[in-house]
Amino acid sequence: MATAIGSGAMSNSLHDLDEADLFLVTGSNTTEAHPIIGMQIWQAVRHKNKKLIVIDPRKIELTKYAAMHLRQRPGTDVAVYNGLARVIIEEGLADLDFIRDRTEGFEEAKEIIMTYTPEVVEKISGIPKEQLIEAARMYGKAERASIYWAMGSTQHINGVHGVHSIVNLAMLTGNIGKPGTGVNPLRGQNNVQGACDMGCLPNQFPGYKPVNVPENVERVEKVWGVKVPTKPGLTLTDMVNSMGTEGGIKGLYIMGENPMMSDPDLNHAKEAFESLEFLVVQDIFLTETAELAHVVFPATSFAEKEGTFTNTERRIQRVRKAVNPPGDAWEDTKIICSLSKEMGYPMEYPSASKVMDELASVTPIYECVSYEYLDKGVAVHWPCNSCSIDRTSCGTLIMGTPVLHEEKFTRGAGKFLAFEFQPPTEWPDDEYPLILTTGRNLWHWHGGSQTRKVSSLNERSPEPYMELNAADAKKMGIKNSEEVKVTSKRGGITLKAVISDRPTPGVVFIPWHYKE
Picture 1 (spheres, rainbow, N blue to C red):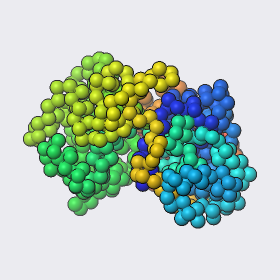
Picture 2 (picture 1 turned 60 degrees about the vertical axis):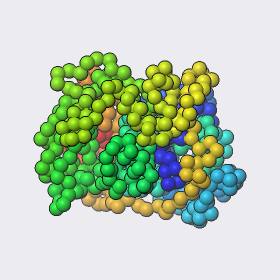
Picture 3 (picture 1 turned 180 degrees about the horizontal axis):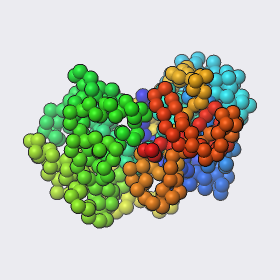
Picture 4 (picture 1 turned 180 degrees about the vertical axis):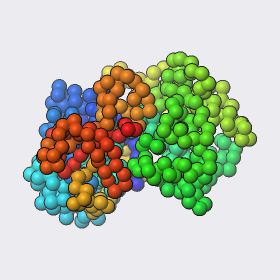
């Protein structure tokens, strides 16, 4: 997204969700993974006559209310988005004025897009051409259409190409830069947006400033008083692959993450983490990863510390301490500052608000963010470069930029980037005939480090399971609730089978919350 429009964040606020005429939800089981947003979309469709298109190989709650449900073969998203774009162009539904005035690269992208006829897309994705055409017309004719997606669209081999193809659809129809429209990635965790904003990325300083640009280096060195790295670091997958190799990573400090549950190949991850000479884990529970650590720092939960969360809509919100931490647990800032002092770099912050003041000084998009406004309940959306406060139609005090790209894109002109469909590295074969998809259910979150310690949630979803279509179950002689072993080329697990019409034939689904 940043390459195409200058920002990788959700372009619109949830305040203007009701102003959309149509929602296109792809790669997101919204009601289970993002239930508040899912409920807003559900209410808009059920009670305000908004239209909904869902692109997902599996039936989800929202498909019950969708005008169209396109069930693509997993991994074929790029072909589907290109096919939708072709129909929009071919039937004269593209916003040519917007394309001319606000974008670049359209003609080059069009050459690729126009090769994806409905017939070609049907052959690749399995979506009937009539459904593809109808969905394209519906999206193209909507006065205000917004697209929502999550990790189902990004966490596979062609995820980057898929996101560019989604952005193409929005720019093609002029559905960006105004309320009720936009490209809206739903973040996978409650403060992952804030963590990225603050520079928890291998190639950027706070505010998404590249580490290899001299003026960015100068800004942070002036405030922090130290020399900072000017070369990008390793990605998460590169870090894991580096462990145990000559010249690779020997020590690691992990905060609030449990890769021994969330890594896609746990056998490989276990071997990598056990090769480390020194592992520190800072967490609120003794997770599977913490069990491998040489040192564990007991940290605090959200209810035991002061600070802010920046949510998926770029909204910065106060977190207030409700109770004192138990036992020897410390707030994250206390742990980090104490450790930093022992290592020769004292950091003293008398309050969380002082941390925010420093962040604002090195993060241009947070320039005017302060506790003065956050403590008043003002809805602050970055970029926030003015202290002007407005009031929404429902009375909410608002500050900053709820809608991005209104007059121009962050990068100037929006850039069309189209890509050819590339099949996944591995397709089903005689030995492994099924496609495995993974995701969340409503009752648990991520690796289950917190939710699986709640008895009421465990009662609703107590154990791992595999959903499979009745046709596949019959073919393999599997009965409902029967224990089965699921294997891939990299490992295997044993769990119960749930026969369901939610997956398509040839596809199974397993939620990832269970260490069993």
